[in-house]
Length: 382
Image (cartoon, rainbow, N blue to C red):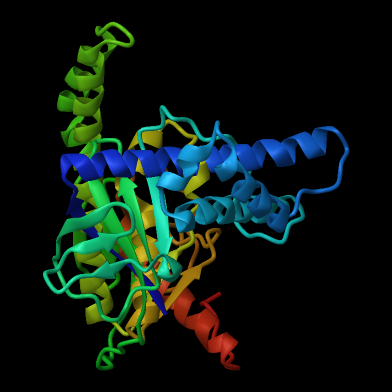
């Protein structure tokens, strides 16, 4: 399977200039190719093929107005054309219904004012990791890397990214074999929420960290300071970086927290079931900020990816399952309840914690779906 390994890199001032030049050249090539295809569409001409765009790029390097394109690696420019081709493929697949997920819009022009820039080097660029642990990039030089772990195999490509804070990262694509963990007997259902991040069917409770809520005061002050700065001034640029740093700290902390907890759940359980929540729909309600702060989508995606990598089973149960209304003991449906009701007593006399009961029902539904898929006749209690 393919994995991405990200490491922080520290280019020298001269290398930062070279990277900025490469970012700019890749952006110009992308925009030129997009303009050519859009012009052909507006004028009713034949679709401009990838080979024609590549030939146009070769001719542009000889043009006195574009000769500076030759100052960067040719692979970077070719990958910019590949990115445009991928964007168009995703767009056409989306409008024809062949692509799952949300609708993908038409490719848009890249802006030089975008605070996030990226370029990609493939094996054709002959990038390498030196014996001293530096990343050697063509026409840029040997860039210092902070290695947090070893690469499991030789990378097939590396993407150099500059984020909104001004940090540089190298993202390596490597191919690794699956590493199944020793089998365990435990299975778990997970009920995700806002008051508590997750309640597991085995009784474990993961408290909600609320990273954004805890950082709101610092973010508010930084954003107020930014709004008072004159547009185009140096002070506004500095204030923008302070805001970006505050948001990056929240995002980094949330991601690290999700990685640790998802890894622990996958290591301790052979099978994991979660509810298939409609996060986009919930993010349009009055709970939008709390839903985004929770990061349910990122957490479930990590669970799924790690389950596949480590030989575990992961599945989502139907989002319309009345997990909070169904008694996990007798199977009776008690009816809908407002979110303020955290405990309820069933007619059979069992008192349930709302979230713990929902987690048990998610586990039962997941087991039923898995057994039915394998040819069994297991179903939820009537």
